[in-house]
Image (tube, rainbow, N blue to C red; front, top):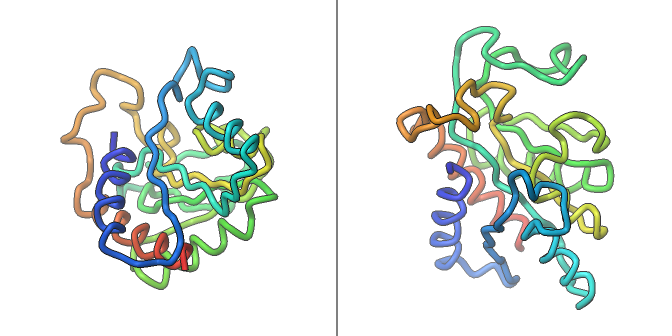
Length: 192
């Protein structure tokens, strides 16, 4: 999907940049049901093995759905009570993390804002909030690594999520490109 497309482009761009640190771009298998939250998730296996190797992972950033945006009022929904604090328009990208990853969330948000005019919101919340752990970053949390998810909020705004109508022409390409640009520069800042 849109997240994998961004991973491919970011990996290509980062090859040309010397950050002084290793940046790994990994597309994990088995993130969806029936494997979701099981030991068979590719990210779970990777994080577990990294922990066994005592791998020093400074940050894991999971790119989820990042291509759908709308300027219409009430195009964005949320878990209970979040609508009091966040926009009702689906015109932003979100960086989501747990409490242990709060500094990572802030660093990504700040770096993104320095390099992109696109709207970015952040959420730091416990894993019990619906949607907070809905991707591969959860596997890294379980093994003590700082991790976050970059998302357009998926089913909280995108009516075609996990349907046959989830097709490429629904991506808002100019906004998707702006998000990818912001993520590129944020990645470079984090890696320095």
